[in-house]
Length: 217
Image (tube, rainbow, N blue to C red; front, side, top):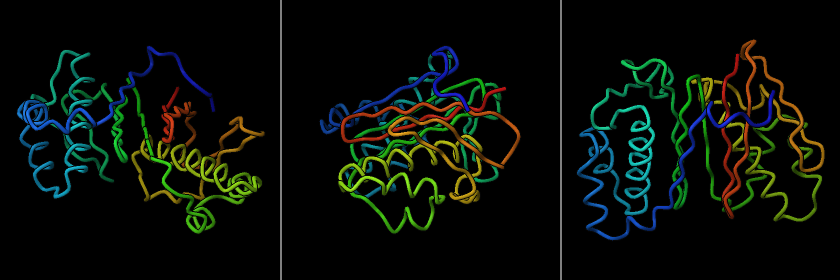
């Protein structure tokens, strides 16, 4: 495992959805989206979710523009386990995530995954059930519930980013791979999914935790 990777190996975009509260701004960006993205937005009932879905589409479009493409002009199809990909541009890999009021997108020339989560509350039962023993022990070694919550979301976003990078999603058990820490420093990662190496980055945004995982040679 490598912590971090050169900027040229990935393109990272984030966006707060506040500016989409304005109906004219929302409508302008909505019109630029593909029919598939607009249909996805239209199926959502809550304004918060509609803004998040549109923001994800905007970031997807922004990232594709760096390759000379547009979101409305490419085919996006789900893989075997649901991860979207570009069948006509197999060298462009991307991942999307959103939570609360933030959206995130990452692009790379190899398999990549990202996850962002608003730190709303500690879910100790979820951690006990799905984290490997080493991760759970690291999370609970702090007595302060706020610090435990931060550690929970650091682990959750790291694990989600790896699941997305593999394309397996929750078909790969969350306790079948493990991140190790020394104090607050991520020091190692072990997994038995494949023989590839993966690099990871953490990106804290105030009350959000976020992580990116990139498959390396």
